[in-house]
Length: 77
Image 1 (tube, rainbow, N blue to C red):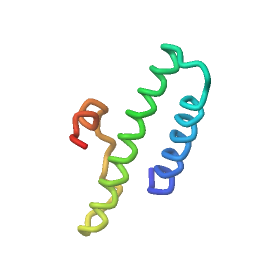
Image 2 (cartoon, helix red, strand yellow):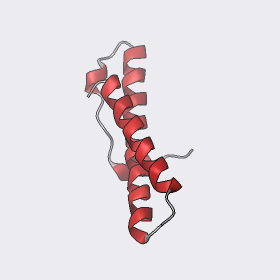
Image 3 (cartoon, rainbow, N blue to C red):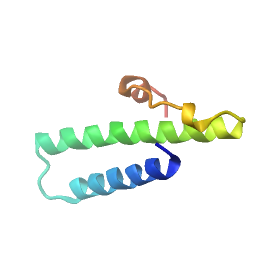
């Protein structure tokens, strides 16, 4: 997955998240989906940052891998 693909995925996830947040009904299912979207977004942003860092330091950005959700979710903001 290259940066264009990652950014496209991020855009798609953000659109879905906004749609759910703007909706009138916030069920348990909706809240669970929003939580999943947030985790997926964190993973995408992390992968994008990894790729950019590898490129900046002369490494192959294709060597970057998506980190597991628990690892990405435990980062301090």
